[in-house]
Length: 126
Image 1 (cartoon, one colour):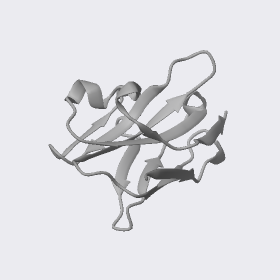
Image 2 (cartoon, one colour):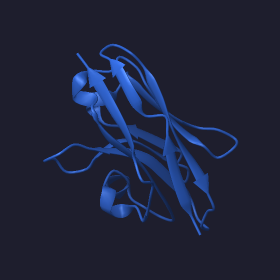
Image 3 (spheres, helix red, strand yellow):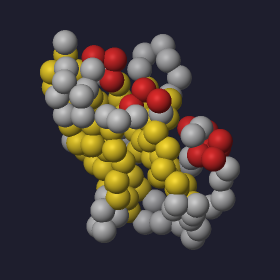
Image 4 (spheres, rainbow, N blue to C red):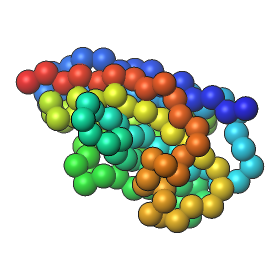
């Protein structure tokens, strides 16, 4: 059984930094694909950053390139370091994971992921 638990959200001023975490409990056979998505009211859940062990790829949405970094620690926790935060980064951030074969296009779609955390809220004030 797989469980994902996010933590580390909070409120910061624009220009600041936050690091959110996703503790991963359990796994499924296959290449791990794990990432961060975010959601705001009235908008579809969008991908922020995804790392896929199989092909050794990492992808970032254009709006976070150069500001956010996804990483994975030896203790299986996945982090999203967020720098130069802006008010438009305010959202509920979700960790998602799946194991197996995905195309690059699929890996950036929330519908391709079976396992989700409960989310952690990030609020950026101007």
